[in-house]
Length: 123
Image (tube, rainbow, N blue to C red; front, side, top):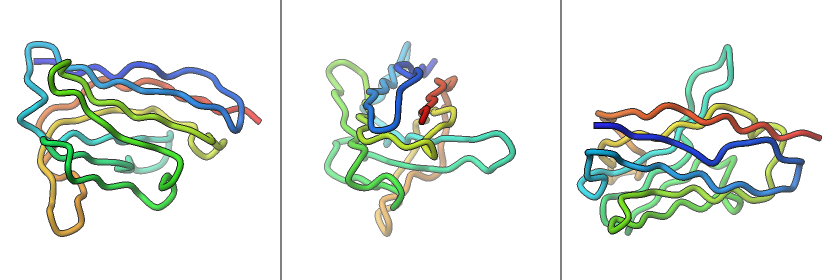
């Protein structure tokens, strides 16, 4: 059972990146998938969550209108399209599989975590 986040890199302010969360030996389709990010010295932040069927989505306020989460269960993958990137978006981004809280659509009870991918936004 493995999750792997990929697609990070170095980009200038205003640029875009697309992150992919892929499942190996693991059916992502049965889980809500969340994207999280962490900066050294700060707590990990949940930035987006998508329900197993894709119909319910959450974004933290700081990424609303710039990031889009989507999933393709046939490909066993979840994506995070990140546009209009800012220096504050610099972090290690990870994905995790768990459940969605239908009160606020945040991901909760994450059972499986993947290794992160570094996103660096330069000014």
